[in-house]
Image 1: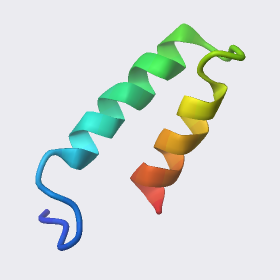
Image 2 (image 1 turned 135 degrees about the horizontal axis):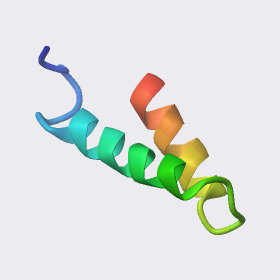
Image 3 (image 1 turned 180 degrees about the vertical axis):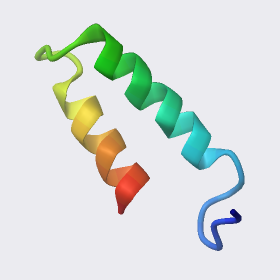
Image 4 (image 1 turned 30 degrees about the horizontal axis):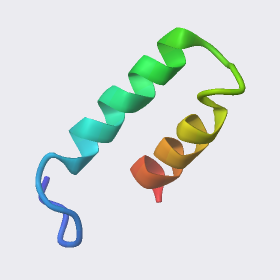
Amino acid sequence: MQDPVHPPGWRSHFNIVFAQSAARGPSPNNTFASVHTRSLVWY
């Protein structure tokens, strides 16, 4: 599926970032990144 706003590959990139963050578990260092990634993926 092509996103008309974001360039190709942006979704897979953020999915990878989110997966890595989720694998590390909740922590003060990645909480913001997790929320930010989630908002980008699902916005």
